[in-house]
Length: 375
Image (tube, rainbow, N blue to C red):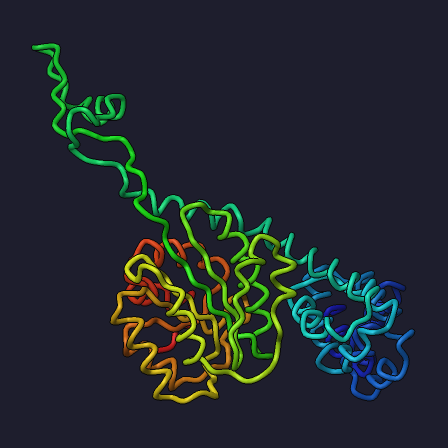
């Protein structure tokens, strides 16, 4: 009953249990200030009131609920406009959405507030790195090393310890002899690094995905088996690869907003490719394009014809079904370029399979209940 009272608001008090406990009353008032349209102006009219209200949000609710309420506050009361206030940043709970908003507003902040914003962005990046680093590294290393052990190599290259273990079932007691029907060789060195190009749409609608992409790129750059390039684009293209080893500097290198020219971005990316057969290109974009359609199509065809393994992510993260240009997504799928929204739990497997040169469209079709797939 208490939950329904908090959801329905004070108008439902006559029909529900009264909230007599002080903390429940505080929770009720905190929610009412944001979600009751008649009271919402009380927050917008006074930045000190907003600071106190944000403190109450963090006091009364657990982390995931705080993130949700903060996101609604940015949407409903124009909280972004108050980022210049000296006490506001200290009262906000760091999360991906807040990091994206701070990145967008960073250039308009003075030096002390930039320092505070940078600290929040760093906290968000560190939290995400701790969550994704191990599964991402394990998935890629495991997949890329899977086929490197030689089978039936020359006798001089036999790994005898592994060969004996592999062939114990062929031991012949009568002759006290083990017959090595299968010889196992030592791991072969990778002949060349895999090339990975991450091409990120930095239009305003993509900033949550952009934060995830920047952090993931920094984690992937730690793998010696990869030669990674990260590019951000609107109507221009920025090569941010030199910033790849510091996730905060990398994120601050993005410039949110502006138009979108995907064809131009793909043309730039194609010029960075050294070995198409060893290259995976990941385009992260909602595919709303302001460029020339014929140019986009020509660049896509050129990349696929050259042997580049290309994947398009319409969104990266737990956003649910994204808004995207269905015509461009359909065109890409028809050209053999899978286009879908990828949840964080599947991103390590996606990257490992893509870098190993596997058929991502086939893999994607097996995960339609988990991935937001669009044909």
